[in-house]
Length: 228
Ligand code: C5P
Image 1 (spheres, rainbow, N blue to C red):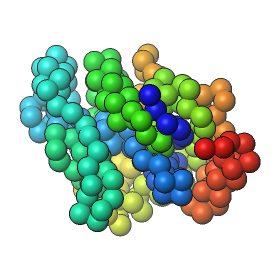
Image 2 (image 1 turned 180 degrees about the vertical axis):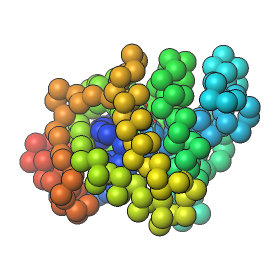
Image 3 (image 1 turned 120 degrees about the horizontal axis):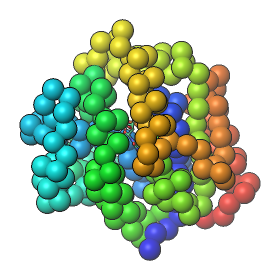
Image 4 (image 1 turned 60 degrees about the vertical axis):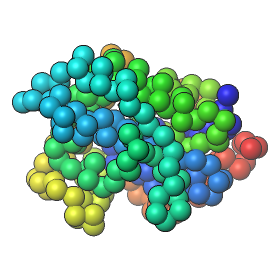
């Protein structure tokens, strides 16, 4: 049903998006950011009154989601990208408001099973690099190549601050580290599909490595062990 799958899982702000998108470009695969899907659902819930005072109205949210779909679209630069309900979402999905609630939304079984189905559908007949938390363990346990990224908390905080600054994202810089700690905790401790390294995943600690170094390590690992 699918072509070749490369999974890139790991903690928040460890460089998953950079590595996954570079690998997709290099091997000419599709690139799927599953974290963005959880963020878009959180944004949708916040905007439509399904989250009030941090309380998520799960059954109402999921009823509404059943009529909506993620799909592939071509953006105005000609790149393949993800759309939800026919729209493309960008850096505004990384705001404090969404980052603060996303892990609570991602804990819900109904949301996970909705996105599991959507992720499977997006990968049909495609070779694809998918980044997230449970990709190599739960969503695509048969992925041909699996990576797991980690990095020290202070480095991750610095990187997230830089992303926030460069993209003009609305985020209180004092809250960046706390948000990473909070999400790591919820993501690792949840019952369904917790963040963990797949047994056969290749781990890269990105703390002291540049983006190019991480990419080269991943590419060398793929080229010496797998054939597409
Ligand atoms: O990757 P990113 O940091 O944007 O993901 C945002 C949140 O989405 C994570 O903190 C996690 O709660 C959730 N997520 C998940 N499973 C995935 C991808 C993301 O639970 N596969």
